[in-house]
Length: 141
Image (cartoon, rainbow, N blue to C red; front, side, top):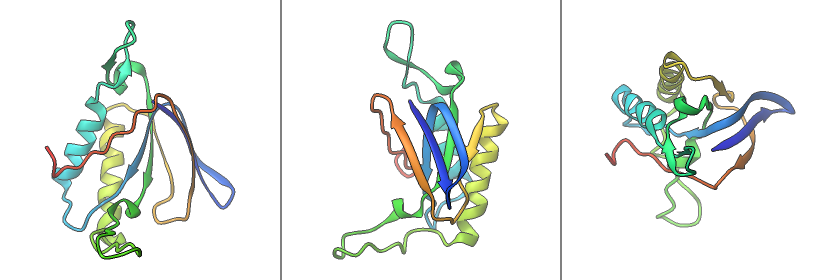
């Protein structure tokens, strides 16, 4: 569970209370089916504490929120040396529609969603309560 805020140029763009901070990287070969899988998986993750303190509840059961920030650097390939290559990241004209589709899918399921600004240089302030950090990849099902 996180509390987070994203800003750009000193201006707050989005802020959430308890919920998930989602850093969303879109690869060149990602499809709408991949976005649907990731949205469903995130909303279904049972990682919030129940009354017994066990990680057993999904986001919807807690009234949690999402902060979604585009993050092409998640696709960095460092196997060729010390300078990361971002060749696996989708270019903006491919990534933006999938990023926006992800946001619309989770909003359609009744989740409060705040966002950053696609392609902007942003600052993310995050309080990771737990901490629980999970990497999801639609290629690993």
